[in-house]
Image (tube, rainbow, N blue to C red):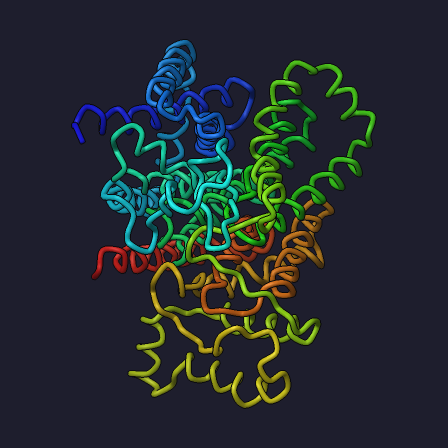
Length: 510
């Protein structure tokens, strides 16, 4: 691996994100909205190109095509350079107004960026895209699982971009850029319901969630679909507020892009599709969208090809054509279905409810040392003595054991996930305006479907990353100014920074 090729990979992903950011700024997005959109749009562009090259068996030409895309991005950046100066001044003013929060954000991002540039940790290594049996010449580069079925590659194909450019060690940038997109997307949505001081506090609440931090230097298989789902909710808000073809197409392509590598890969996009259709139709009716599509037929037809690719219908159709399961799954992602019906569903909801209570190991050790009390032991005792006798092993695929292990597989979402975000979803369902209530209802329905379809295993926490990422901004509606005074806000920000640094320290092995 030469230093030139490594630098080329980093430079290309950087300039592509910057070009997307400037294009969205020119289109009228706020700074936060453009920064949330840019990484996801860049990843969708790269994924589309790589899938086209692989589907057509011409991946060897990708090494020449990707620099062309990078050169086009450089031209865009040069022509829109005026927006860079405007954005820089806005960022400096924001940092001066919120020094504590922005210092914590910058420190966390910098520490995670160092890890991202050292390659993904063993837990995050992407599956080998050349493994598995070949069942279709057009898809010969795609991996298959043990059943021989192909699996959706919208997200899992992205590591090939860094491999093709000679910088495979930078795969962690996928997770890091997704993490950054989540921060800006949360702020952009939180600003709909709160002033900047509260909105930036909500951002800290979200990005300090331990499981999110553990995936912020990964190959993105878990955090990128969650970031894309938040991208879709932001696009939905923008489309409702001011109908336009750009946000409408971003919404549709984003929903399709979330079809990624899981047996339940259609659950999330189906929920988002129904949410988007209902909200857009109730707000503006059908005539508005018909007129918008007819007025922009060129853009709509241009989006059809990536929409078909992102829908993964070629992969699903190939599986059916060759008598395989219609959808496979990457190695290590085998799904056990809940065969116990409603009783298993109720049992799983209770189990997830107990797992959501995640105060992290330092709190557990502190309570054991000072009070001789164990939160983990208490939660386990509640399940063993009261829940298990009622539902037995219904819905289980493994013994239910409460674990707060600080790693990417077993960790959950920290104390603020259960103390702030979950109540915020409930408050939005009860008292929120119609749009917020619709999003909260859709996310709750998503959780209900996961609990109904999948049997419980210790690895199922990854299903909930999307829920917590997409509902974090609702905390802004839960904490209006008269509840969140300046001192309380600073205290909460300090707590978030401590949790963030704790999670980062675990990644560094401290």
